[in-house]
Every structure is written in structure tokens, then in C-alpha cells.
Image 1 (tube, rainbow, N blue to C red):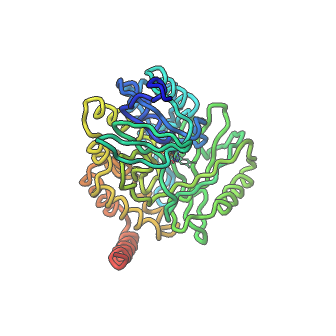
Image 2: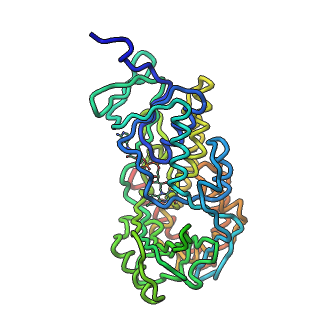
Image 3: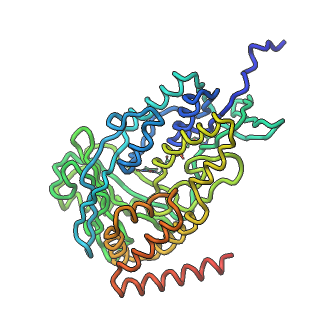
Length: 391
Ligand SMILES: Cc1cc2nc3c(=O)[nH]c(=O)nc-3n(C[C@H](O)[C@H](O)[C@H](O)COP(=O)(O)OP(=O)(O)OC[C@H]3O[C@@H](n4cnc5c(N)ncnc54)[C@H](O)[C@@H]3O)c2cc1C
């Protein structure tokens, strides 16, 4: 016979998925006093190198009880190099998350606030009597006021791809000392190959991560191609890989999952040009928790984080970038980073107001040389026509 003690008490929140979106939401919900369970197949520390802007981390950290200095390495200056515009040193600081420290801090916040961790997968969710029932892979079910779906996004047709190697260094002038190389379009320039840039970050142990990155391509650029281009650069500089390679594949055009309450990549919160979503996830977790703790529906908070018009503009921006060749892509970023910081920063934020994103697009267009403007217009017209004929 079932004893009442064996039936798990109903939850306020069940979070499916322990990526950056799920773990930060679960930690925030538990810390807000909500009865929270996190269902995840594994609690492995995220293996990817996750970066964000330092101000984004500083803004998100307090609500998650995080010390930015402990959970991330900060870089200054942030450098962009293009053949068309030379080297530009951005004032905006960049940061690399120390995944081990961040993961442990969020897990500790979840557990010390009474949150539960349930190993397994959520295989389905159904509504029942004003509650949500999560079906678990082991056959069990858990009832919650709300199930937050943070199970990640789909594969997409356009992707950012990168091949990274850790090198012992010194790397000479490739990466600024203490700084981050956000993009160097000149270092890997090859007019006959797909556009790719060099990305570089000093790591905590004195080594340097260098990545050959294809910002966006449909179909995605094969990783082996990027590996070969990075390999040629390393050989040219007398550098040798000294650790695990990093393989990056980020879907850029995955629509948000339309059912349920979704977070992170599952919610289409990946920026279509940069592939970034971690800053948005750290920012959103506590906001969703705040709404739930106040007895409100969290979906308006999530809708505000991904405004349809902003998403539409950024998607159009991606479609315009995709067909650009190496010279046009280089010219585009040379122009983009001449904008005032608040303007380009707005374009890089999925949560920005559509007017700010449209203004950044218009300003970039105005900053391009005439030939590139004509090229961009022709591309935009082709893309627009293609979109119309696809409908
Ligand atoms: C190598 C790499 C580098 C990247 N670098 C950056 C970066 O620098 N900055 C940035 O902002 N973004 C970066 N991204 C992109 C993006 O931000 C990440 O993909 C991020 O992990 C998305 O977070 P998420 O929590 O939404 O989803 P995910 O990290 O994909 O997490 C989803 C989780 O759900 C779990 N799951 C799946 N199915 C189920 C289920 N049925 N039940 C329960 N759990 C389930 C998965 O195991 C996974 O742990 C990078 C991506 C990659 C691959």
C-alpha cells in the first residue's frame, strides 16, 4: 500500500535541463523560496568555453548571489581587427566564465535553499487540474505549478562553427596581453575560403585559447576546414596545440519551442549573429523566479526577453550576413565597430529594443563604403525576395 510519505510533495517549479539556462533558473527559484526540482541527465560541469560582456555578468551576478571575480576571468582591452579598419580597442570589457566555479556556486545555491536534483530526463509535460505534470524517463511523474523547459535548442540550418586549440604561448601580437581578441578577420583571411576570423583568450593557467571561427554559415562550415586553417596559422607562428581541442557548433536559426514555458536556447534566446545566450540566461533566471515567487505567470517575462520585432530584425541581419564573402564581412565589421558602444552593444543583445537594433543596422549601413553599401543592398534585396518566396 502507498504511504502518503512516499508521494513527493507538489512542487512550485520543475526545471528540465541543467545547462546555463536551467541551472541558473533552478538556483534562483530555490533561493526565492519556491519548492524547486531540477531534472537533468547529468550534472557535469559544462565543457564549452562560455564568454559574455563583463557588464552583463556584473548586472546578472548579484541576483544569483555570484561574485563576478570568482566565477569569471575578466579581459581588457577587447580587440577587433579587420583588414579594412585595422585594430580597434573596445572599451567594453569581456569575460570568460570559469565554468567549474559558476556551476558549483549555482548548484550550491539550489541545494542550500532546499532545491532537489532529480537525475533523469523529462520526456513529456501535460496540464492537469491547473498544474503541470512532468513525465520522467524512469517512468515517474512530478507535479508542479510550472515546468520550465531548458532542454536546449534544435540543430538549425545555419550555425556558428569554430575549431579551437590551446597553445602554450607566448603568442606574440596575436592576442593582446591581459585582453581578449574578439575577432581578427585579417589573421585568417583567404578570399577563396569561407569567411573566418581568429578568436583568442588567455586562460588562467597561462596558456592561450585560439579559435578559427566561422561566424555564421548555411550550411555550416565543416569543422575540419576550420581546424586546417587554424593549424596553418599555428604552424606559421611556430605554435603547437597543448591541450584538448574545442569544437564549437552553435545553431543560429532555431525557432523558439512554442509549447510550455521555455528558457535559454529552447526559447530561441540564442543571438542569431553571435550565437550567445548565456548572459541572457543568467539575467532571466532571477526574473522568472521573481515572477513565480510573486504568484505571477512567468511567460510575460520571457516574452519581454525575446521581442518578436527584435528577433525578426536580428534574423534579417543574419540572413544578410550569411552570403557575404570575406572582404564584405571584413568591411561590415570594420564599420560595425565604428558605431558608438551603446549602439553596437544593443545589436548584440537579444533583449534590446527593436528601435535600438534598427538604429544600429542603419548606422552600420551608413558607415560602410559606397561599394559595400551597394553590395549589402543587393544581398538584402535577394534575401528579402527569398524570404517572400519561401512563405
Ligand atoms: C562550444 C560552445 C561554445 C559556446 N560559447 C558560447 C559563449 O561564449 N557565450 C554564449 O553566450 N554562448 C555560447 N555558446 C552557445 C550557447 O549559449 C550554449 O549552447 C548554451 O549552452 C545554451 O544554454 P542552455 O542552457 O539554453 O542549453 P544547453 O546548454 O544545451 O542545456 C540543455 C540541457 O538540457 C539537458 N537535456 C536535454 N534533454 C533533456 C531532457 N529531456 N530532460 C532534462 N534535461 C535535458 C541537456 O543534457 C543539457 O544539459 C556556446 C556553445 C558551444 C557548443
